[in-house]
Length: 390
Image (cartoon, rainbow, N blue to C red; front, side, top):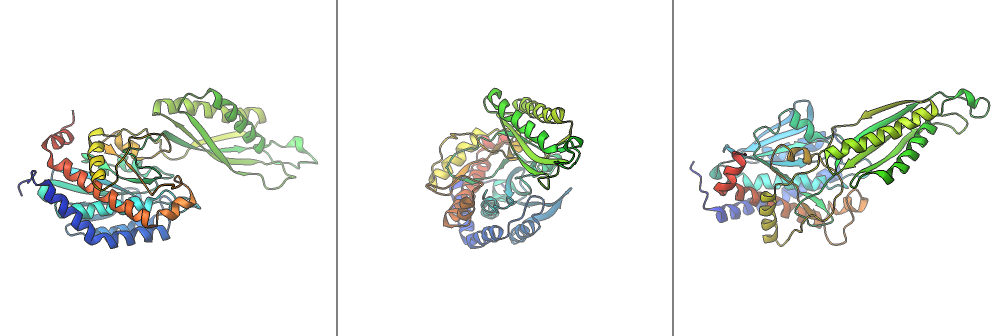
């Protein structure tokens, strides 16, 4: 079928109509995810529910379980040469459920896919939706990049609910580490000299981190918590464990900040005689590289929906979508759940993710992504740029 690149207004109207007709099901899917939160790599219900919704889209080709990832998904509609990838996240936080709004992210990606399905072939597109597990704790997108699930993509996008309307997220590069100290137990009163106190080792390490923060470079952060350290007050703890995260403006700075964390952890072992085990937990998250041309198109489309987006004003958090941006042109705009909304990873934020405000973010995000895809597909210069990168 020949491309009708000049008829974008009609395509946008048809995309909006397709989304409107299917919106009740999209919102119901969001609520179902919200009511049944699953942790990273355990999103078995979520991925099946998403697959069911996608399979109902005329012409969609759906596959669940990609490579080593049982809870990853790929769906495609259209068979055009321009491949535009929508990313859906659906993992939840321990104890907080969808306090990061991943139910909204997944529903918005689903909505955009539905909106684009009727017009994908007319504009020479393949619309791909990737269900990406474990953004919170396992770097699902990094693993999917490594096993080739993004191969063929010309541009990638997703939206994220937040407490501000911003064109892009400014996340830190990030790495996580599981820390364990192994000592020797002893009676804390009768024979403490026979013990090696693993909790003391962790205490020395935490003190070292606290002191080292003064010398961290701008943009570097170290934070963590103790998971376990002893079982009784009259027993020298023979084991202490926790998790620590290191963040920085970019991966190069992250390497230097990680060296500081390593020295601090080693100090605890050296001071007490305990044995240190420090293991990287999940892949490294990179810094995000926003494609400014795509972001400009998304911003214009969001403004048409009555939601103007500001330039990014602050740095915070981390995302594995950043790793995608190092391989493919990428956008990751933030859409607010409303004035006065709390920040992400808050129980009140989780409540808003299943509210009318959350539903509005799904509509705005899905339609702005769909319209942005149509802009990319209908502009010969954008197609050339994406399909023939320098």
